Length: 66
Image (cartoon, rainbow, N blue to C red; front, side, top):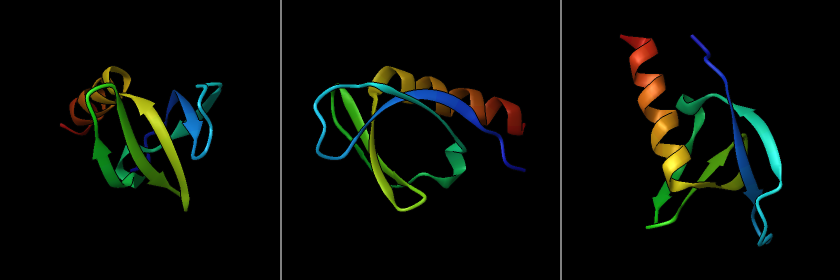
């Protein structure tokens, strides 16, 4: 079941978060958690999500799958 959520991201090589995209949290790969940011790959594109938004995304995804 694909469950997509809208998150605020920045793309690899950028310094400013500026794009809202819909992602399926189960499609995130190569996840690297840092204190403020989480880097991940989705559909072959490297993105960064704010850590608190990432944690909320994963929490909501797990609740929906229960």
